[in-house]
Length: 249
Image (cartoon, rainbow, N blue to C red; front, side, top):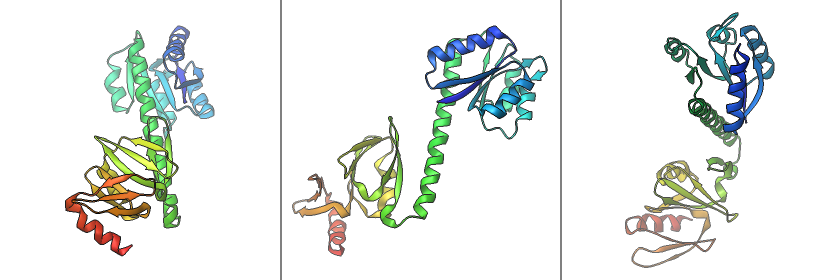
């Protein structure tokens, strides 16, 4: 959930924003409201929001004054203003977005969704960095990679990946647990990540973990039989390199 603080000196404006968020933004948790710069600074420090929806004109200053008092900024912010001329300054202050009053529901919802997407991407990036650092400290057999699906973010042991199969711009990952993940990365991207961990690209559409090879059925091109029973084609141009690899196992 994205912890959100609403900052506006007008009670009706705060209530309208709250109503829109509660009705249309299910990833938002409203942690509080503030009525001016001084109040907002205090609540930002205590509540530590992920997102602030900021009015620009307030009795004791502006939204810009508030941001200067809160540096370094550890939250995203969206300006809400009745004055178009503030838009350029808002952009220069790196605002994620700005909304011009009177507030349009669709515009506010889209701006908040953009904030949510940006924070999810940042979270994935942090997880990947943590994963990389942990991998440096692990035995090779314990190496992991992060996999981001529509449902969840997974930390997967490389040794548990049986094979990867291309599906246009997606890749299907088949695991030893019999679980299958669909990842929005190309097979080429996975080849670059896994080739140094004992994986071989047998075919334009297939990347396999050589530790799961059970046998090789000879033929015009040939078929690699894996431990899970899957039969993976080996293209004619990759067959020689594949056989050389098997001889070294």
